[in-house]
Length: 165
Image (cartoon, rainbow, N blue to C red):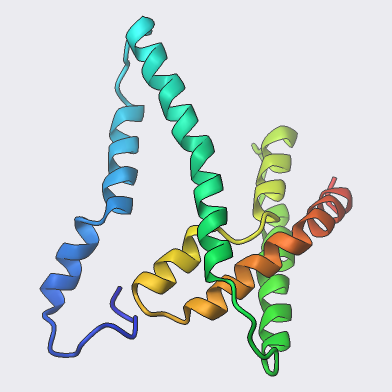
């Protein structure tokens, strides 16, 4: 929010902080953390709410994919190949090696290690281009990188999971 192109120097820093703490993402994360600690009895009503939330969760992937598709555009690739390569290396290879090394710490079982390695090899998150657009932070580049990660993930993820058993 602070580093975006839409940030004006004359804006008060307090306003940036207020916008951060009132953003939907922050409210959702804090709410989820609080709700995860509450023991909610399971009955027909809560089961219905859970099913509705699962439906919303499934629709978010579709909505994010539609937004990503709308933001894609043809652009000259001159100078972007190095960025794409570096991004893939950091996001889908270096991060995996780091997580694999850290998971060798005593006390991390094999299943948790596999989950950590697999999740670290996943492509970049879809909301990134949405936030980049909202805060004027190179949205076209963020969209291109996210799209590239998604396209190569069917190859990279199985290879990574094979190399880090």
